[in-house]
Image (cartoon, rainbow over all chains, first blue to last red; front, top):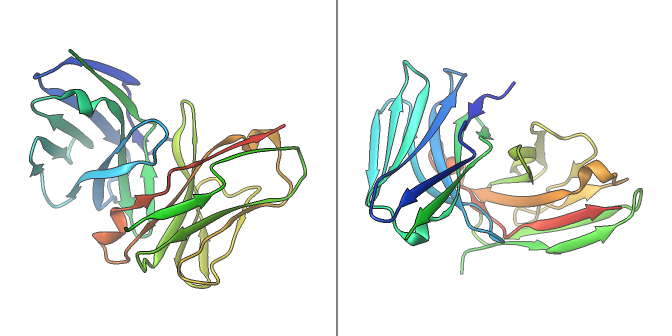
Length: 110
Length: 115
């Protein structure tokens, strides 16, 4: 059973517009939620996280929103830039385990 | 430079021939982990280690072994590789506080093909 779901395998967004990546989870016991970014031929890199006790965390162009009642989180990138083209993994953690989603490939169009 | 180093980066082997993928980190991290990435399945955790001599199974441990004899090293061992272990493997490390554990530093990956 997939505990962290990213239902959109890919997303294309015009440069300068807002990119919104979505993630759903099933386990209400997760205490942190994270986004990682991955370029081809590289390992994933940490992007931003949010504690389960918060509903928003912002870091520059990146904002993560958490809706606990809907078990949903989203990553907003504003404005989108060409370097944002990558695969984005949503992840959730509890105790010593981190569970990743399948990833969403983001294409930023010129 | 803070980094996680995996070797080899690419490996082609045959079914049943034991192999080891090494992982080393220079950040004095307590937590280390191995993942595999497969198309359509994302990143799945194989094993993790909270500290020296402490290891535990992740979501897909079958067919793999690990050891943590030193803090900096966390090798992944495939005693008898099979074709379904063909995958892209990542090692990661992080600190052990509640927040630091979530900020994992990943190696560049090892692409393994088992024929």
